[in-house]
Length: 436
Image (cartoon, rainbow, N blue to C red; front, side):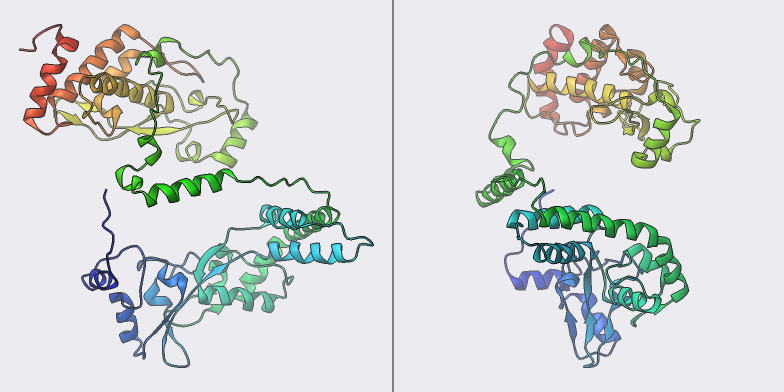
């Protein structure tokens, strides 16, 4: 989707006035103006986080929307402020590093040691820096004083949401009992984090760290390339501008090579402990489906769909395919299938698209799996426990040819003239001659 760029501040203001929301906010946005009117304020006092967030943004801690967050300040201005809430562990490590290094008989710490201390401190932070409303940020400090927490402790946004009692257009009330209970829940872990902070600071102060910087880093190379792509307009030509500059598939080989040499059968089986670990640490899909779930395509049970990957002993994924509906000459509603069935459907569709593109480069199908019927997919696969499917290559050839017909005959290419051109070009591939 092409996004139009604003060419002037006047054009930006007009966009706001006409009710548009460009994913950020402004003091002249209709919502800010209505906030000023509702509070009978002299004007609005915004900060950078307010304008960097959309008009429909809500505080992740107290869940209030912007019109509920704004409040009158002592100058009768509408205070519209959001803050970046952060864990203090980075400051703790830096302070300990300074103290330990300064008290050594011989100071050996270097700039690299300082960078090591700061980088490593993120590993013991309890949460990421998070934009929250100013009232929630203030409530954190008040609650810490009320329940007498350690000075280096800070409540996370989710924890703040538990002890504040939000009201519209005013500061929060605080439930001290809940805040105290949260502090008690954190105390043991917080003490361990403080011990780790001291270890990190001591390693840095003694220059015994392992950090070795790179010049330039991969991120710096990537950022530099993106800047140059933008400067020369390449990003306007393609979402992945580097693909304009080289052939991403120089060794195309056979389009069907993905199914000609099946991957080895997995003989190991997941243990209950490995499944429990998967569920707790990367259970996005696993926990979404109960144990009775079966893949509607290959029929394997949830546990049987577990498969080893390059980075993890076992993975489980469920993905949606838009199986082709021949009756309505379109794709049907999405069907949730196991990862191996999704891969088979997608590869078959991609195979058809690649074949078609050799005749006409303008062929474009957004969802390759939408070219394949569910029954066709079922017919070509032989499922295996914890392994990729075996594909019947003879049946797959027919499925691919059916998919190419769909590219020609149906609504993947809208122009009738274009369809006629495709039929002429593909007649030999599909029919061995004229397609009449």
